[in-house]
Structures are given as C-alpha cells and as structure tokens.
Amino acid sequence: MSVEYLKKAARTAASGQDDVRAAVQAMLETIERDGDAAALKYAGDLDKWDGEVVVGADDIQAARAQVPDRLKDDIRFAHDNIRRFAEAQKQTVADCEVELNPGFWAGQKHIPVAAAGCYVPGGRYSHVASAIMTITTAKVAGVGHVTACSPTRPEIGIPPAIVFTMDLCGADTILNLGGVQGVAAMAFGLFGVPKADILVGPGNQYVAEAKRILYGRVGIDMFAGPTDLMIVADASADPTMVAWDLVGQAEHGYNSPVWLVVDDRALAEQVMELVPQLAQQLPSTNRTNAETAWRDYGEVIVCPDREAMAAVADEYAPEHLHVQAADLDWWLGRLSAYGSLFLGEETTVAFGDKVAGPNHVLPTSGAARYTGGLSVHKFMKTVTWQRATADGAKPVAQATARISRLEGMEGHAKTADIRLEKFFPGETFDLNPTN
Image 1 (cartoon, rainbow, N blue to C red):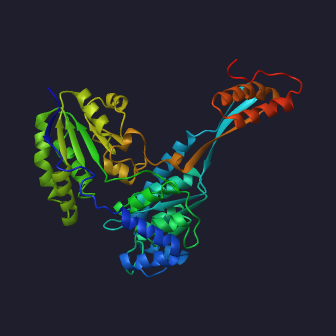
Image 2 (tube, one colour; image 1 turned 30 degrees about the horizontal axis):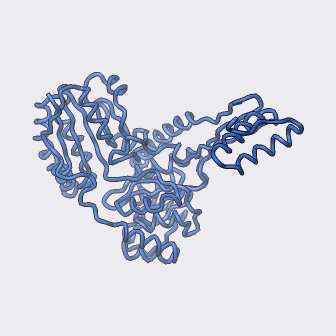
Image 3 (cartoon, one colour; image 1 turned 90 degrees about the horizontal axis):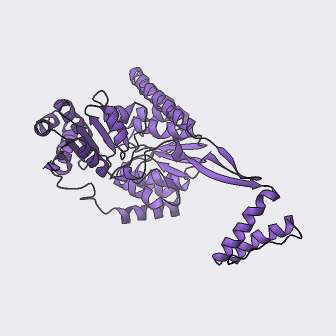
C-alpha cells in the first residue's frame, strides 16, 4: 500500500499572498528618513492612534488595575513556566577553552546582544502569550535592553492584559505601535529606544515582510509564514480529540495549513466528517478561518505503517507536530524535522502556544528542516578567541605562511613570516608550499 491522499490541499501556504514587498519597502524608507513623525503618521492613518507612543509608568499601573486577578495569576503561571524553561536552555550554553597545541589556546564565549525588539501581535486577538515568549526569553538570555511593541486599539492603546504581561516579563520600553511602523521604530531606534540588534516575534504578512527586508541590518528570529500543524495518529487515537486539535489550529487564519497523517482509513474518515461539524461551534470569525483553512489547505494522508507516517512528517517539517499514537518513545527517537513536538493526547498545541514552557515562536513553511524555534540562543552571539605563546605560535605560523602562499595570498603569508622573524631570530624556516 502506498501513501494515499484522502484530502489534498487546493492551495499552499504561499498561495494567494498579496505582493506587499513594495509597500513595506516604501514605508520603511519613509520612516527611516523622517523618523518619529513618519511612524506617528502611519500609526494615525492605519491604527487610528494619536496618543503617546511610549507607555509610561502610570499607564502601566492603570493597565495592571484593569486585568482581573485570576488572569494575572494565569499569566504569572505561564511566565514562570516559560522563564524556567529558558533558564534550563541557558544552562546548556557554556563557554569553553582548549589548548589545541602546546602554548596555543582557543575558546568560545556566548555574548547576549545589546538590544532586542519584541513584536507582539494584536488585531483580532490579544496575544499575551507572544509577549511572554519573546520578552522573557530575551531577558533570560541577558539582553541589555528589550523594547516591546504591539498594535493599538483606538482610544485604548495596547490592550491592558498585554501591557501587564510586557511589564511582568521585563520589557524596558513599551511602544504603542504595531505593524511596519512598530518594527521600524525598534529597528531604527525611534522614540528614544536603542536600535535593536535583533527583531523577534510573530506578526501578519506586513510585519513578516518588514523583518525580511531589514534582515542583515538587524538579526531576526526567522522568516515566518502562516502557522501550521500536522497530527500523526494511529487507530488508537480519539477521533474527536484529533478533529478538535485540527480545528483549534485552523482558527489562526484562513491560510493556516493543517494536516492529518494516519495509518487507519476509518479514523481518517471519521475525522474528516467531524472537522466541519466542530468548526461550526466556533464564534463567527474563528469559524470562517477554520472552515476556509480546512477547505483550502487541509490534507488527510493515509500511510501503510508508522515508518511511512514518520517519513511524511519529516518531509513536511511542520511547525507543530502532534503524535497521537502508541509507543511515543519510538516517535520521539524517529522524528527529525519539526518546530515543536507534542507527544500523546494528554498534551496539545494550545498548551505550547500559551503556557507550557517551550517557546511558541517556531519555524513555518518547512523551515523546521534546518532550524529550530526561538530560544535563548537566538539572543546570544557565539564568538571565538585565540591566544598563544611564541612557541605555541611557531608551528601555526609556518603552516599559515605555506598555505597562504599556496592560495596566492602573500600578504597573509607575510603576517606569519614577521612573527617567526621576531620571535625566533636567526632561525631558518622553509615557507615555500611547493617544497
């Protein structure tokens, strides 16, 4: 039996994307040229915001007072989990030093960037979880200054729960700015904040394109496309649970791919029947997103065995990969391409999105083949150093001179020659690479 598609996506994540590059490029150029004034104009035109950009201490206190205590406790719970996971990650980062040859040492250091810009999505949803994931991880990494920004709502600014979360997680400056203007303000150092060395956080296609254009001038976490999910399930899986997990991810947006890979045709058919029914239970906008994403981007794939299922998963390299199948240890050892892995029905992508601990800023569109998600490592530079005694430099200088001459780089060779002449006067060295 070969792999069979019971449902094939009519579109891909790249289908139907507006060409926004020119518009975003023009906005960035205008904001870089005209500074704060241009960012303010875009904020007024696009978000109907004409209030203060920098959120002050009194505003933070007022926002805190508007957040219900239970929600504050939930946010603190999520923050604690995410902070402790980031701290555990940081423990895996170690400086090192090795004596490569007698008298010649080399090593590496991990240095956090000086400034980071954290973009927190707004719009339809108040993404408090994105604030926790980005700001907390940057602070644990040791970033010197963290600026956070998020889209405003008319007459309100950033929603109070997001402001509370940004402050709790340690943001040094909070900006009432979203979209391209928010990204630009952090990248160009507007409104008194330091220029960001790295920009992180999810956003819409305009935010993603702004980060793409700015990449190189600043670091970014990744090139992000629409969020996606693959569920791998065998005959033991609960079809209702599988269907709800697909619907829950599809509500992100009309172009959020969701894929189901099974080795049991009956399970596949049950889930295909359930998904449209369950989507009907969502609020209207969420329902429209889920229905459209499932119709246009959803896939159902039947495989002959678990090895074929794993091969399909590795080929797709999904952002979220949820295994609802027997022998979870086998899957953990076998699977190799995913942003974040969820093992068993006892967990779900929503746990990871909101409070569990591992970061939810993850590679999309197959990028999990070559990169992982946001972590403390993204905010740290791994740099190297070397040091030597004269005796330790002696064999290195000789080899450097000969290899440099073989490559035709005489200037490089001379920098080795002069050290041999200074440190070992009177000695003769054969520095001809052809001898």
